Length: 206
Image (cartoon, helix red, strand yellow):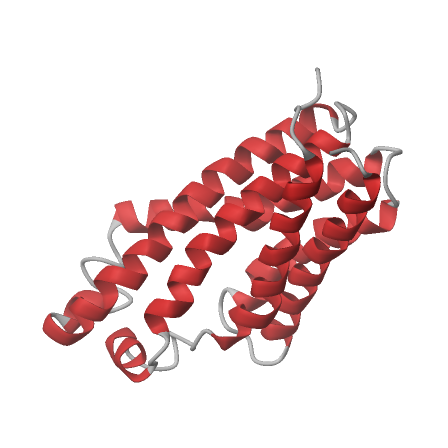
């Protein structure tokens, strides 16, 4: 397969910014399982801001993922392209859900709080759950790219391994808001992206 042709340095910056926001912003998200979701939304003043930032972050991550693939010049093989496809789907769904959370959740929290129950008609609906499953592709797509990069003799293998490991850890620990190790996994996932930002920038393939 031929490599993806893009200017790598701008995508490196995109990946670095997304990693910084993930590391610094994600641990700030309140635990929606500790209290009713409507109370969490009403009680957290930066709810909308945080989710608008999430939309921008995942879009930047996608640009970064494209740059990561391009920098390998076709050496990521089929796994790399599968990872990129998974990333595209995951970013699209994550951005869509984050937009809904930013715009719709505050309104529902004030006017129809029962709709925001974890097992309620919205969050418990098959369509919403299905979108949530597809959104897992955001970190998992990067993880697959990390595995492919670790196998390709282009950048340090350790950078690929860290990206491959940090994505699933982020899902398994920060997703359910596990105390301490959850935020730590978000920091690791963000740092992995920032590391790749540096590597892609230094590759000087713009």
